[in-house]
Image (cartoon, rainbow, N blue to C red; front, side):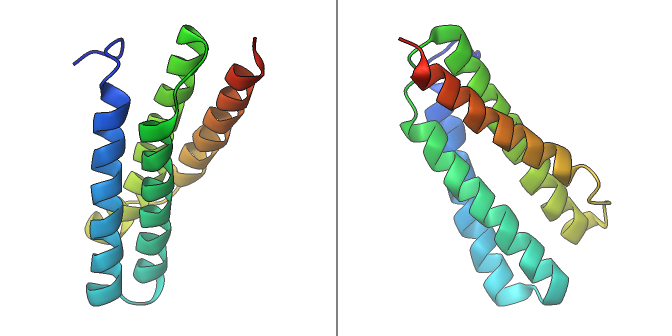
Length: 116
């Protein structure tokens, strides 16, 4: 499946949704303190942005594609960093970059919707 394939946002969004539910359950039953907070945050971002990828139908082909790719990359970087911090002791310094990509992705959605 290539990025030009119209199915990828739904597939990736569904996987983010499943990961978000799994992370929430893990955070509730197996994590404590900072790890629990990180995992709940990662889960929330995966769920919300997974839903966005499933539901968002772009108006402009290139700008819409860029918006979806930016959001997908942001989730992977933000949520992945927080999960990696818990599971592997990775530093969290890449999470802000992921968050910035998520914000940029939403701005690209707004720009896409503003176009006629």
